[in-house]
Length: 363
Image 1 (cartoon, helix red, strand yellow):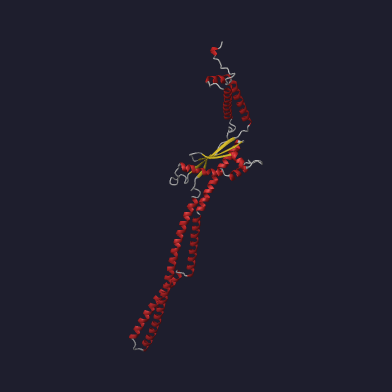
Image 2: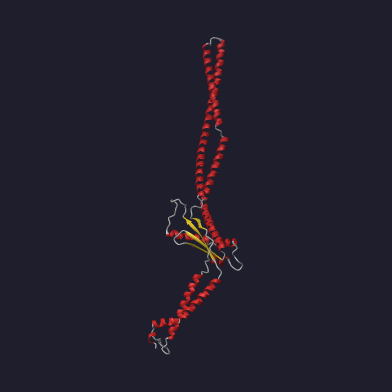
């Protein structure tokens, strides 16, 4: 059977056994200090990357920053936390050993986190060598930026494939029309035909002048038909006028045929020229749009930029001697108090228990 709990008795019990608490705390502190000094030191270097919205500084393209948008940026942790990237880094800095896998080393060495409600991505590397830790953190940050940029570039190039095909089609159409223009110009020339028509018109003009002259002579000789010479010249003039008139009609018919041919060729050339102009304008427009897309390639997604490559850490991140000592002291204090409390409870048996006497009442 136990006596009722008395706080004053309990406090006096703890006061008279303070050496137990002090010994436990001292032992825990000394043990923690020894273990902390024996554990190899490890240093943590941190590189920081800012994730800028698409479009850079253009306010028309800047994505509104919201909590949901900031949360979506956690997907960029996948770039820095990539197994293939860490494998390349481990090979570059000779980190992997014969008995340790790359995955296990990655879990021990690398920590990637996007700070909450910010656009900052942090890459932390913990290694026994502080210089190596900083170099590895900076390398991972640089490769993360490059991987993000290349992925964005590839995505824009894939989306630009229809424009590339459209440009190729416009170029092919333009080349076909240019070749058709050359073929038409060689097969159905316009300038030479126009020159022939102009020559025929001039020739017909001269024939017409000669015809008028021959008809005038015939009229004159017809008035002098009384003489034999006049009759002979009249016949010759009439015959010459007949030949000239026939020649004039032939030239007129030739001019009309060549004019119709010229009009047909000119219409074909004008139609082809119109198609060629349209194809040239279309090709220029498609190429301008394609060049704009190529110039803006990689800028439609978030842009990663290193804002802090990290510094060579001067103080180890582990072991944390102060924290270890504080934890050991706290645990030892709690454990010793629990031990004394249990001992106090079991020691309060009614049989053989002597209630402590107040100091003032002792004789």
